Image (cartoon, rainbow, N blue to C red):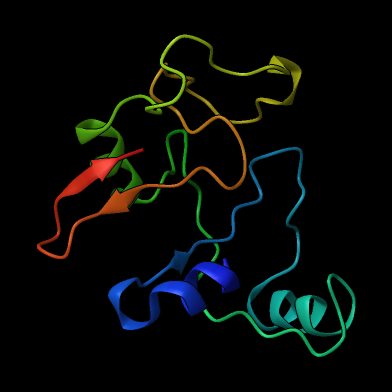
Length: 119
């Protein structure tokens, strides 16, 4: 993501929302996430150039309203509208919907005027 930020400069803003709904891969919180990125993974004083926001749920009954809205406008990823999850045993939210985000690092592209254009 840092490379994209460098490549496009102020023409692209990346908002990163940590989420712990995918095999509990992100159980740290706010400042811990930044410290882990900086010192452990990838380490070497790494600092994200994207906007790191609060950890949220992106699926299920407690999903953040932003993701409810995004998924209502772009219900499926543009590169794969058929499959859902390769490891359904990792689903830990309820209810499960076909429009759910399937795994970490799924992205939504939003135009400068605020319209979601691609998932």
